[in-house]
Length: 609
Image (cartoon, helix red, strand yellow):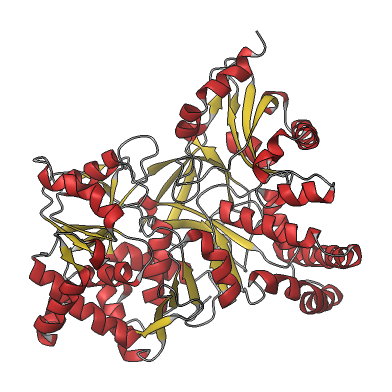
């Protein structure tokens, strides 16, 4: 476990501002927050923990002068930039409730959140966000009064972040600041997270200081990290995973946060920083694996053979640890040798040569991706949790892991599997219910305190949880058979050409699929076979189509009859959050994909008629 830093009070009574004060007192000169200014290339601007707290105090005075009051929600729509991170902490010190809204939220979702939260203020990044929020100022059903815009040149008639900071500098009184944050209590709301709303209006999940600190303490008991470890903050701060990792756990651990505003540049950031820890949702790990596979494919055969042999040693080492055994001395020595001489130089290309902790969550991880990284001695410690559980409920750890599982429950969390396979959870960090627009809480727990998660899974004899799929996403065929689409999709994606897949078949007699070529590996595969084609045209090339057909045939051979794909369509363009097929955390928006490609799906069934 990580050595827990000095806790300034009983964990059950701690608030985030108390932890920030601890950081300024105990670790004031250590780096806290870094970011790259526009046009500065590799140069990072850094604030220490003492500097962070001074900035937060000034901003708190500025937001107080704006009229922000204790207990009210303040909405934010910004990327991962310092103004966002510091505003979040400043509002917390005022006793207000910072709420980040996804930058990809549709206008209807923005209006719903603004209306539901009863927020009077919204802090926005620039003109793109301003244009989407301005109409709400004239909406009589919305309480929104003022917009604050970070990019001064794009603020228009609205208040700028810079002027607010200047006001705070003028009005800041240390005594008032210290008195103000001490009025917060552990049971007070620290934030409200609005779920991504893939199947309807976003739901409001209130999260308290106490729940966050309890989760942080429980995680610290199973996670092994260097002191003051760096964290690359690239996922949206509207998502519970990055909110925990990029703000709350970083304050708890006095870590060093590196802000990465463009998720597509996270690979370049990792190559620059060579971090000791990295968290990625499954799609991120898939893309990193694809990029590394593409790089390996370009190496001479002799070097590829040496890497594959080293990989077999690494996988054997991981397998021994997975069984709970200390690797035999001979295997341990062999692994250390190949890691230093063969594997680390390859990992250094991705910036992963210093990794001691890697993790994933959000969706079932494809097992072939887990095994790929195990071939480099990297064990992705898959975890599971929900917004409603303050993030992590179960986790693998160096002291006990099973590849493909999502680990065992953290301290203070209990699991149970319902008769229909749904995972039920209760414990110290499970929320009390969804927040209604009138400020009351809708109780969603049963009489014994169990929360139905909507996930399907099983618990093995050693207490490890294995995910099957989301309950609402399970396919029920016309013959009454239940099929996990994630299982079929991950099996299809084991072929390097297939980067994304969506399986459909609810109410139908058989399954069909939409497939997308992997944008990194498909061109490498084609070039190795002398195929010259624009990457976007590869989906139409006869050799590529023949190989995809073989990939589907191989996948079908590993699936039972009900799970097999009868027909499929190979698409030309990758899915992403910007085009609406993926959530901001890179999960499939199944309904959106089915709506967009409805004619193509119908054609796959009509082809039989």
